Length: 172
Image (cartoon, rainbow, N blue to C red):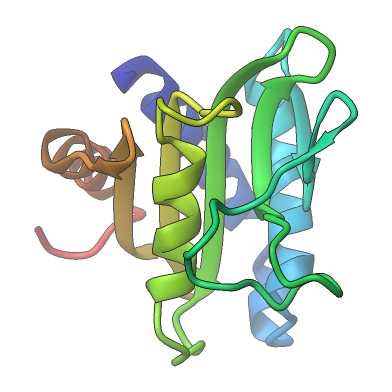
């Protein structure tokens, strides 16, 4: 999993180097996630990279009952991860990413809940790794890594260190 996280850091490095316009003009999170997905796609050969992808074959990704409700659809239950790295046909779900701008002061509960659900091995659509990225103008202010439905402190520390080494992270 460290390899996949290091590959993500490479994509973030290229993203921050080439997409300063997005931050200078304070564009929205959807614009950021789309452009970040472009750089991620270049790094993950053999995988599909999609934004707001809520399917596994013909099935719609939905939060389990009695959970925080999403407002992304009319029923309020579908999950729309910001970016996913997967193989659509197999399915092989590698990485689910939630992106937040540092200026977004809404509680992180919903994004965290989605990542817990998306990486929960007891659910049929589990991703191997979930990542929460809080983006500033030139860096990732705060990352979290989820594995097995919970935050993985060791991999979170690894990602934070790799970001710092690449000049993309804050103080540890």
